[in-house]
Length: 454
Image (cartoon, rainbow, N blue to C red; front, top):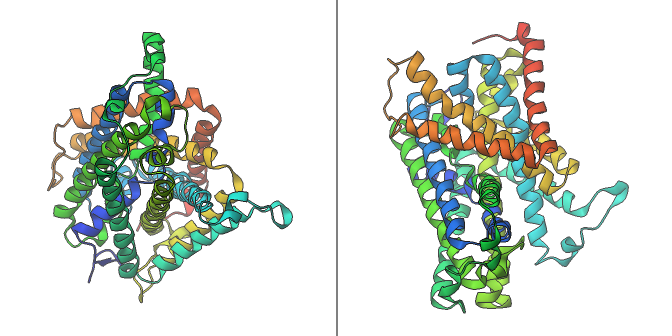
């Protein structure tokens, strides 16, 4: 391993970078979202189209991050891109948001969901017992997982990335195995994949548009994480070559798996059987394989969620590491253990914030809050492609986003549309996301006179 940025070591190859992308993207969302789409739209073809559109949108974002990351292969991804495009104030706000909504909140939501699914194997967790002082047992277990992941990744960067590789390969292998079993052994019916629910024909054109927009919000949330490897660019052996490849390979693979899983859901239960169901993975697997299928898919979901939380535990602290370099008062976050190569203080900070979020809200509130703010700053980061092409045309760009300027403009257009619908549908959680942004700005301007640029 060789040193890149002070303290960080180059040790991540194409495989591990791609696994970070896949692990970041595939969580519990794919196993739940289709039920809500089935209830609103009732048309498998339209639902497939929305999942394909979500994949195309993610690929557009990945192409933009590939250009930015190859040109600026530093830790922190969008923090660096926004700083170079729009200045330190907005960059600091993005990092502040990343600490709360970007990584800590999604990790909290993922691990709260993991404990719920573990209730299938541990009945005590299904009861969600209340302990002393109103503390819930499930929250205590979720916090235990938070610190177990922190311990794994603080013990050494090679061990942490190796753990993430193994668990993500298990996740991919499990999904492929389930899809093959459904196609060869499952008691499904191919006609269900094409059968439209009667209520679809009763919808007006405006209803179809409204429900499609709402459904796309959930779909885009399931695709979040397409930029996973960009955060560790400073630790990649050859970021100019492998960063674009990992983003495109990971996002493309997840898109194919998502389409395959949706085909399995409809093959097993049909659009009417899934309508309004929050656990479509379990319902379809029970129809295909019986009770054994439920156990199999529940185990797969647990592995998927744990891998997702692990990946976010890796990449989040790289953002805090980056802004710790720029601001003297936060320089402790820029420190790396000489023995392990891990940004220990940044990992510990994220663990504390994640634990607090687990205790503060419900799973649904946490996910809605995180989804809006993640989309907001991903959009700002993607816009950096346009800003830097104009401001710094001479910048070396080992990789250029295919289809520019359509690629970033398409991403921005769809993202703005989904954020508008998110505000209309969940104003409280969306407003909380905006408040987080404002608080970050206030903190920056209040203490900027003490900040030093290195």
